[in-house]
Image (cartoon, rainbow, N blue to C red):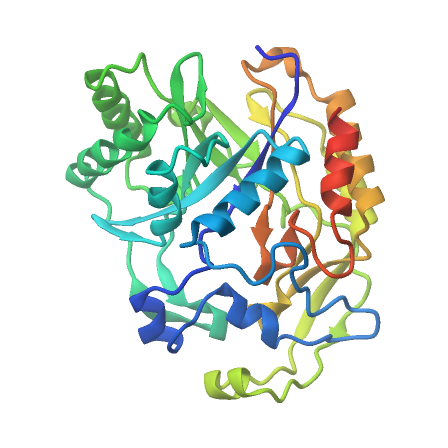
Length: 357
């Protein structure tokens, strides 16, 4: 096991147009569309959160991806965990990673997490409107892992004891996750790997390690473990065109929690065996959601204190690698990013490097 703690930043590849989003949300839609339309909902609310150093990038461009990797390297990020989208053979938002595979200059290590949720119009509170549905089958499990093996064979792909790391976002949605994991392991061995190192995003205390996973990681924020809210903040009526088109009436209630109080609750939870630690620098999905979840008053120093606590208290000797999962590198519409913004610049990256040096 490496002596150095290895921060893994979750990476959202949504920042480029695709035909499906053009059809569903309007021509040229990307995650930036939501980011740039939001406004503050209460006094002192940090919105909009806008990118600084890297600008409003398009991840189809080599220059944008190289700039991300250079920034990650400069501040000690070990690798990215790319969200992976697969719907019975239909791939979505795949171009950034597939272009990286063809470009040896993009040398940052990476792993993948299958975001195995249905795509709906949930952003506008119409979850019954299905856009893309996940239909599980053992035949698809075989086809899927065979597709993934081409990624696993890349020299930059992160492995643990020579086993490629692969993560499932929501294991509870599978009809038979035990069987699926066994199919994946069998196919990986056929392809020449000793095995896979399979994990899942722990979004609650519900346990899936007994289903055949090797590990979990704490997905932060943990919406099930919260302090008392700061009080209900009435959402301002936002009269911009994008919400008008969606038919949203922004007079709902945001759930607002103090960041430091939230962190203290997480510390009190302690750590669990075979569950890697997770952390979030900040969170505010009011750019996406009518009824938003907001961690208010986050600062780089408070984030550093939490990360330092993890470094000093997690039982590193009980896991085969020293991963800490940071959510996220670039979730701009969830107000959740290490990438520099206008308010904080590179401070969150600086604090990451300082805490883990």
